[in-house]
Image (cartoon, rainbow, N blue to C red; front, side):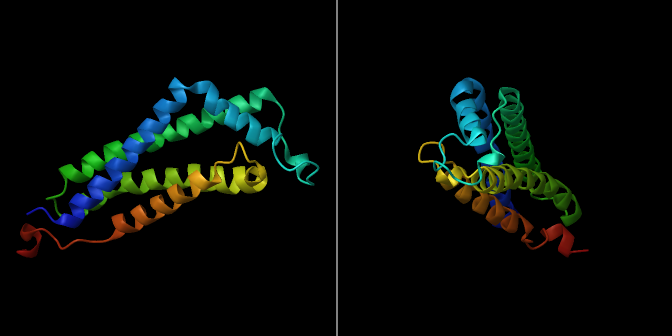
Length: 171
């Protein structure tokens, strides 16, 4: 029997991976638009004029490029972990709990990487360290916050246990 919770867990992990794939592809296909975002956030050139945090600004183009490539690689890893994890969860939906738990690790890894990107990267570092919240044109906090919350909620959903399949209960 397919337990609905296991199907939902597989679906949410896969959907997260699909989202990551679209973000990853968008960054590759429209490289310069998103590079400009990283450049402006790190250089802090659109934050409040005269703010006391300007000593944090990074104005070296090579650092912008390394940071942006790092974001793209992390988003690609998030996508791969989510897509593979969703498939593995779906394929093991009828498996015993130990096998299913091993498949869950892919989802946990995806959500961990997602939280690293959108919570640590965009909210903690971008918004707070580089004062991205002060920018009216280069502020990604309003996009990153719901994503970070979503990955946390999905991780909690993934941690829920469904009843063991009929074959496990008979033992």
